[in-house]
Length: 82
Image (cartoon, rainbow, N blue to C red; front, side, top):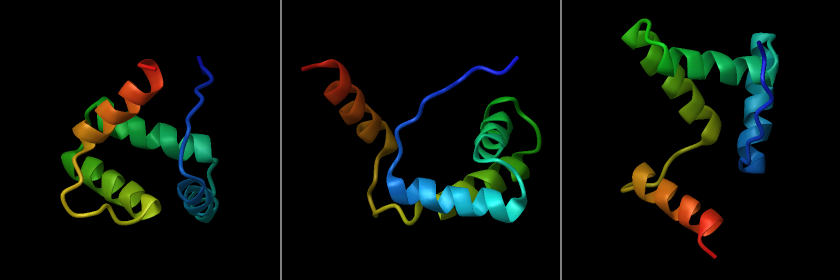
């Protein structure tokens, strides 16, 4: 059963992701679904790493010292505490 999910992403990330999905001949939704499936359901650890690296390539370089937990906290705080 498919369920709709709304994501807010940087426009450049979306642009690059659309190009990547087109290059692979799949929809953007399928590209993201495949990545999340590889990430969450298990499977081959090498495939997980390859999928993650592929999406990192889509998103661009992350600045040195970037802390994803800290960034997530900031985003959630901004969204829910006003």
